[in-house]
Image (cartoon, helix red, strand yellow):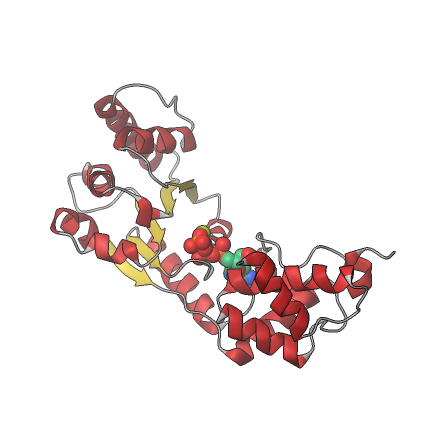
Length: 268
Ligand SMILES: Nc1ncnc2c1ncn2[C@@H]1O[C@H](COP(=O)(O)OP(=O)(O)OP(=O)(O)O)[C@@H](O)[C@H]1O
Ligand SMILES: [Mg+2]
């Protein structure tokens, strides 16, 4: 029996999590959000990216890392889910190439020294990207003020990008986090796709994986939108599973029946 890729004419696996920078789905809003965040970082300020689960935050953060030239920026991407203050410092230290050891105050001091050194000596501007920041505890988020506050003049040595689900916005509205929220010069967001955009997205993801024709009929693309509601992650999962099911059934095309079965498999 043929394998899945050759059945649908893919030269690589479609609907993967990682996506090459040049292969991103070209939606104007995504590119606007990306440019606005990059511009804020270029101005040495901090920013936030707040959007629902599965709408493309991590992918956008990866695009930021790729777009900031290595010659000018030192970017550190950290997934920060559920960390204590000390854990957070250790993660940041590790990302900076520092030994992640010591007490919380000594770690903070080491980080501050390192950031200053980075800014003064090799001219590289440190950018700290904290993904999944909606899961951070309030006291851990409040710690970010310490990391950006050490330079006594108003110039910020470190740009922070906080990314997370809408819960992050509520967190940032808390009084204890007023100082952190004030330092965020730009808030970007991402939205789900419309029905037409979902279809274009499916076409795009199949095309970049090498397919000449869309392996989903109109019933399937509609069903994918009805179930996935234009959420990128859900769309990817449904598309991938439907293709697997069609392949198992020896069918060269996905219809709404395969999508319905995929849904049952994914979210029983
Ligand atoms: N611009 C894009 N073009 C094509 N595919 C994308 C794009 N952005 C995201 N995706 C795809 O959508 C899926 C979800 O994206 P991503 O993981 O970035 O979302 P997220 O907002 O970080 O989700 P979560 O909140 O669960 O972490 C991924 O499989 C990714 O490949
Ligand atoms: Mg993510």
